[in-house]
Image (tube, rainbow, N blue to C red; front, side, top):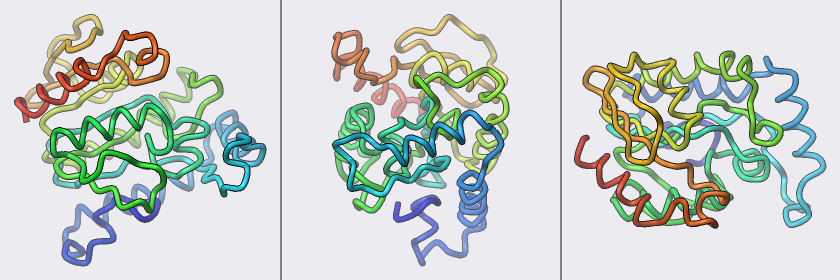
Length: 237
């Protein structure tokens, strides 16, 4: 992706596809959102104060749209951008340790053209996959309030409406699982757990522990465990 909108909006071969322009318009709307005062204040303060390691970088400091293939059959749903990850780079899961895990896995299963993602102009492209978040602004302590989650929810609803080929939703963590349950009518909602599955009509939902450092450093989530999620998603899609 070379900007705030979906990667496909910059592909002249696909300009005639109305779903691309619709996703691009939604992305622009997301990037301009200032509805939640606490999130606006936090994301913009972080973008000014910065982390010492990124002191010379220009932070994005705005909400983050999803990105990927508009014809994707697999949607990966996370919690929210990281303060010094997506909030810095302008692309969800880009420039942080969680994203390192995610894009390595996507690359191993043929969903990404490269295993790393450091900034939004790094050449990363997704095929048959789309990555997004339940909340579009970096929240303090990585914890959105219930009201903030509810306020942001229509963006996810509209993304799912536009991504009409989705057959599998991979939810990264309990928060994403609950967010998916709000926008998709689950046939049954089992207790969240790694590799737990449910359905929403023709769409399968596959749960994964979030690839946060809290989980990966402690061994609660290993790369073989994470690979099993995407192997299953590939089978179901």
